Length: 77
Image 1 (cartoon, one colour):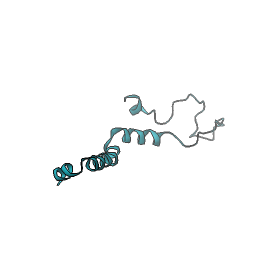
Image 2: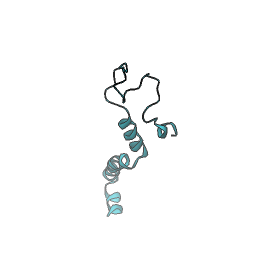
Image 3: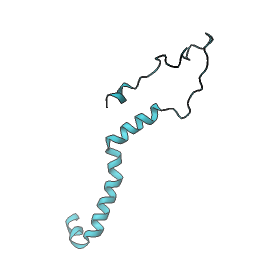
Image 4: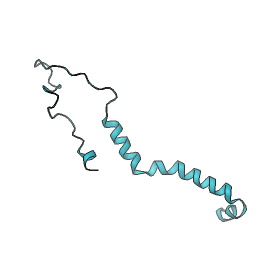
């Protein structure tokens, strides 16, 4: 059927093929996977610096303190 369609209407067949590729390629692209991983790692709102008085164990004492995920997978790309 595809060969018959190509013989009768090559422009319409080519445009349909390009349209289908435009729908399928983003799903199977590795860029989609990595952009999703980067978007999930970046917060929507950035935290306001808070001084630690000893009662906040989840907040680093200093902004440069190494806490949380270091995003090593992003550095290894």
